[in-house]
Amino acid sequence: MEQFIQVFIFLPLFGFLISLLFSSKNEKVISFFAISILTIQLILLFSFCILWVINGATILDYKHFTFYKEGSIEIFLDFYFDKITLVYSLLGAILSLLVIIFSKYYLHREGGYKRFFITVLLFYFGYNIIVFSGNFETLFIGWEFLGITSFLLIAFYRDRYLPVKNALKTISLYRLGDICLILALWMSHHLWHQNITFLQLNNISLVESHINEHSYYAVFILVMIVIAASIKSAQFPFSSWLPRAMEGPTTSSAIFYGSLSVHLGVFLLLRTYVYWETMLSIKVLIIIIGAVTALVANSIAKVQSAVKSQIAYASIAQIGIMFIEIAFGFHTLALLHLSGNAFFRTYQLLVSPSNLGYYIHNQFYEKPKLGIPETKNNTILKIQNAIYILALKEWNLDSFLHNFIWKPFKFIGKKMEFISHRFSIIFLAILFVSGLLFLILSKNISHEVDEDLHLLFAFIGFILVLKSFVVRGSGLKAWFLVIMSQLFNVLAIALMNDTYEYVEIIVYLISLMISAIAGYLCLLKLKNYEKVINLDSFYGHHFDHPRLSGFFLISCLAFVGLPFTPSFIGIDLMFSHIDKNEYILIVFTSLNFLVLEISVLRIYTRLFLGPNKKNTHPIAYKSS
Image (cartoon, rainbow, N blue to C red; front, side, top):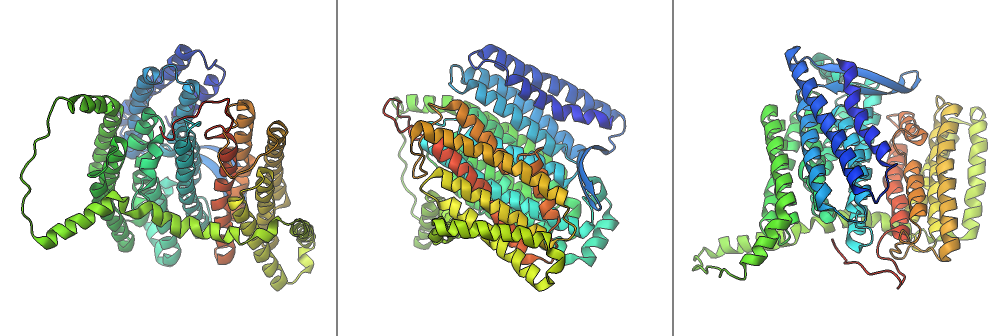
């Protein structure tokens, strides 16, 4: 029975791959095939769940495939099924099918009809990987796919300014959650000396003994998990991204941010509950996050003028309550709560355009009833007004995140203007070649020198990617800087680690350089067509060069570690080879990968997405 789980993972992937072959003009075939795939998935899943319950509802665990194995390091796919998986998988199958059927008519004659359906199938594939995951590595693969598909669907109206800008803003916060999850994986490997599975985490005595022996490491892992869950579920202080993500089509908002994707933070907490159920500090942290989110999001929802934003904040408030329920151990209640919230928010979002039409119609025929205002205590009135103003400003959460997370990175990057000079580039090239020589001769170099060099190279890699993050000039220069940053990053980890095999380095570098060269050739071709490829605005070149836009996007995703690529495995291996005591190195490496994906996708969005600069193309609305 365990082996049948993989059918639910790969059936949506099969649907995605086949859908790529269909003509974008053939709407009936595209929608019929997607609906058929999801219908078959739902029937098979429902039958599987019935058989599972009849056979005793025992936990199923299936080790599917090993990507890499060396010593204690093993990267493998592991699938898992229990009551949490049952609820999430059925919820995903039912709601995805309903939304796809609705989208068949809602998006009729939309320019990106095919693009929407194949992206939703890819999203559903990633969603299933998460809910059926049996270890953190498998979960992270699905986590990455959800980030990519979120970006693509928010920027669905890619000729408009705000959808593109908000897609980049959302993927930036998603990337922060990805890095927190990577850090949890990194420390978990050093704590357990293996890639622990969720089935092994059910061994309470084993978990308690590890936590008692390594309490600080366990707290670090759990804090990272809580932050990742909070970002994915838009909990305080990361709540502001969810209304911005509503710039995509209403149907994608319903399936992503009303029902499925936004509840995956809850899933992560449920799945790791055994790990932190004995740790009071983590429970208190989750309760505080949930309570503050519920209060703040509820106050914001009451004053929103946009219906999508109102629904988004109302959903966030309910998820905050779910966080509290999980911390208190009321898991069945949390599963019922999230199911009800998912169905209700999906319904609200799908009918919201019709309801707005009714309200607009009624306001011409119904006069508002004016009541006599109640006299209130002056102090209470001042507090209410203060909360009202804060709620209107969304508690300045967007400004808070910008000022305390992204603004410092931009400030440092702008101060590194000297890196763009020709002399600096020549010096960095010489330094990199010298680093390769040090790597080859590392046995003849003292430990102190080796340690200083690897920190220096990690710092240079971080500075280079920061500089790429703020480049306003040539897109080629920004692309060159991200390539150099990764070369220095790999060198920094390899220098300090005697167990890092040359084969691992070569596999990762080959994958990295193939995608880097492919991206560089795309940019050269674009420059040949358009002469100037600056990053000072959004240029919307996808209008004239759709295929080039697609190739460059694939190059970008492969470069930053698209799941199932050698670069994705290489990133996992690199983090595995950083020792738990190398604090400075892990900080530089984590920050590097945090900014890397944002920098690469920033190049793509500014060159290929947004309103086209040419007068021969229509100017789209700023927002969707």
